[in-house]
Amino acid sequence: MTESSHDSSPEPRTRLTGQGRNSAGRRGRHTHTRKGGVPEPQPANTSERIGLRRTLRFGFAAVWLAAVLVSAGHFAAGHGWWSQPAVVSRTAAIAATWLGVVVLTRRTGGRPVVIGLFAAVVLGLVTAFPEEWALAGAAVTAACVYGVLGMVLTRPAGGLRALLELVMCALAGVAGAVAVAAYDVGLRPFRFGVTVMVLVLVAGFALAWRLGQGVSSLGRRGLVLIIGGGLLVLALVAYAEAIRQWGSPELVQEVVDAKAWVSDNLGAAPRPIEALVGFPAMVWGVTVRNRRRQGWWMCALGSLGAAGVAASLVQPRIGFVEGLTATGYDVVVGAVLGLLVVALDRLLTAGGRRVQVSATAPDRPEPARFAPLL
Image 1 (tube, one colour):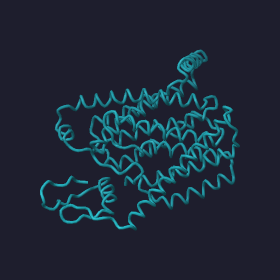
Image 2: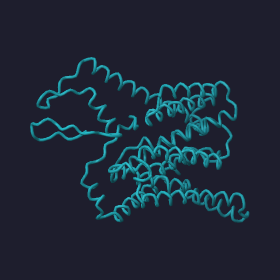
Image 3: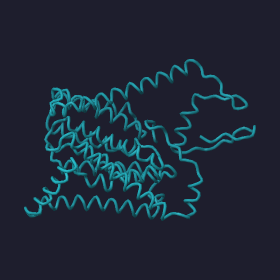
Image 4: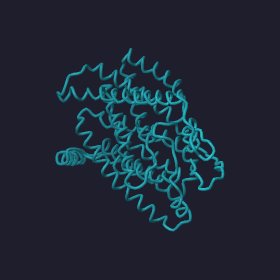
């Protein structure tokens, strides 16, 4: 919304586009002002509707959180904390997947009712007929949904507040990892992780195309850095696959021993894609979004962080505590590198005309965290 003027003249009409129109329309829908800027009291039925909506939102969030927590019972039984039937964890994972689909659809401007009904039918069939291939497809869906949620549930933030958005991204990935593991289906970890990351990256860039106003608005330096990040991800995946396929037994054993040494001394080994690419890009993206919508392109690359976390607990030898510890290390390393990238970006652009205008401009508004972006 625009700031009110200091004189008594009527407020000039300002055209809002994109996210500004959505947020302004929702804030102004139930607000009426008299002459002089004095707000009129809201009707009783309007207040009741607002209260009902808030109650429904809190109820939805509570059910969503409960579904994720019940899905984690799969790990609780493994650690001996309490026993829970596998069918209960799987049903909770299906519910968490469906709720994630609904939230993602609403956030991206889709039709939650239509998509929600379709997803309910498909996931209901998976519940009724838990075939191996159906459970594998549901696990891929859950990981992809929560990977993209790690991108779209963030908000523009500058400075240290960007680290809170990084934590939000990581939490979305953890929720997805819990749901994926609760399906309890045999998957090939490497192929599963690569599949999820590719699908999430494609979906993230498709959303960034609309939210970031195309590639032309990205700028040469931003485009170079994003391409460089993508090439780094490709190099890491290719290196890991090359070692698995053609590495000598001595080299493979050295890699395994090095990872085991790190895990024994630190409790877990950080994951390179999340720590070196995904999470730093997310910190950079939400910081840029605080002034310009081009930051969505960096956040699309940052969705790899949540996607990698969501696919991290597929390996049977990795426990829940070890997976959380590794995610914590990824967040710390990603936060440090992300802040360094932000500082380097500001240093390279210092004194530019666009930066001077952006520095004096107010923070760019976006809809609330769970409100539609489109």
